[in-house]
Image (cartoon, rainbow, N blue to C red; front, side, top):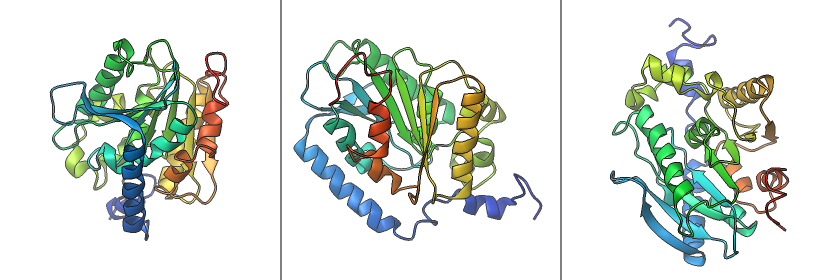
Length: 282
């Protein structure tokens, strides 16, 4: 077969973006994640399945850190826009909760039920609602960090210019949809040429919030390359970006660092100058 992207044919590209196949301990890891997520829900003050739209998955959970005037940490799960529910990865909330954030676990409609355009718009609608929500779940005038993993990292990056967002964190994200459109992932996504151009964060770096781009250095080379290229492009555009490579972390294990209140992710977020003038995270 002939090359279709960066010297890869379709078969090679399929492997290059198959994170589950590349992780021999995938089932065990996801089992631990679900157990830890259930524990977070048991132990936290939580409001479940709040609505931000009429579709069945347009909902979110709000978890309180128990502190007054706390900033908000919005987490968007991955799954290549076609897998998982917010409850699967809610264990990541432990890190921000213990560092003084209220946490929003976001849900969205998956492909093929929703197009990429609709998925992106849903996250925008959630952020719009929270920006103007006057209840305790709303942003108020407090700092907001929007964080996503994998496909969620793509969605977070696309909303770094949202007026309610003070910081974005993209963990092992996807920033160029072209290779996604050429491999097995497009069987359900059905990306259009217009969506590839308009919804690839690599190609629409607008003025936006300071951004952390993290990736595990034991991940698939294409995932590492996507993060490196995006961070470089943000820096070249004059944007405030921190590239955070985590040695030995893989695509799923990197979430254990995010869930660690003393991990590299939370340290970088808390140390950001965006937050220091507004609240004390000690």
